Image (cartoon, rainbow, N blue to C red; front, side, top):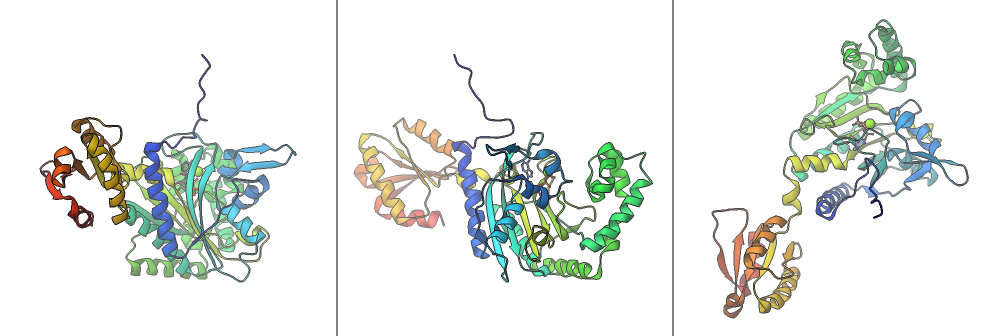
Length: 424
Ligand code: ATP
Ligand code: MG
């Protein structure tokens, strides 16, 4: 027999049993973003490697060791996108989207990074990213954070903590950078190899090290906050008070620096303790310098990206996934006559109740078998139609998630109305 093939390590199929949760998440995000007047952008999955080198930065984990880079048949170096911001910026400049305008956009799709696969960390994973261009004030930082906060609420997610920091301007950061180099240089003997390599190229990255010994040194390092320029300080304070006014709780974390080079001023992460080591479900911040660095005109920008796999895992841990995607009703059909009547009834209900999620039993089976299927599908209610009910013009209605609830008999003519009230 021929050897069977498998998907690439760290790249996963989304199976039919999982896709309902994905679609639920995607449509919740899409509807929410429409309510805030954000519009979708779709860019190619492959770009010239140069784009990511310039946008993400040469001295980042992504560009140094995580990109899927290859030569195409013309010998040009291309890469699978490891993130979405670079393409948004490229497309915005290319199509003049930033010229004297504000833009609120979002994207979704697969991203590719050659990392060590583990729970919550894959080589193909999916993000939804939200980006704004042409808006300099903290009001848009606050709006972006409010969008994410509302999303967790709509998804029923709890216990996610917002961590916030400001990285200041390139000028204030440059001063801080020198201080950091000075500080870490005094502890060279303790630093790990990676930190030593980063000392002069990207010393801020040492602050979010996971290496235990370096961690201790980093914890005692001078704080960026003491070096913030007055405008950045004000921007940050305004953002904080807007969040407070909206009732969004946050924790200021002066060690939060983010992995990418392009951030200025606001950076934030949403973190949960319920997913183990890969607890960041959403991360973002302001990147005022990127558009001009990529050849466009000066354009302030702010955005975030969330990891869909991690969100779905959290929904599962908090048991929000099944209830969100399961059918409202499972229609049990006993006997041949009921089978053909059932499919007609189902169509009628779908017309009457456009939001109803209804699964009709197909392929026969005893009532017991069908009830098991209803249970497996996670249905809230079962409708039971047999010969007797057909003759009497009634139907059985049974709550599935309450063991103490009894089956009731309803008139078929009143079924639509009754369901509308039960399903709110
Ligand atoms: P991490 O510190 O976990 O590596 P990151 O800083 O590299 O994250 P970003 O580039 O900011 O992550 O991406 C935004 C979000 O995308 C992350 O917060 C996370 O939820 C998700 N994400 C990033 N890399 C992966 C991956 N390899 N697999 C699954 N999700 C990921
Ligand atoms: Mg990473």
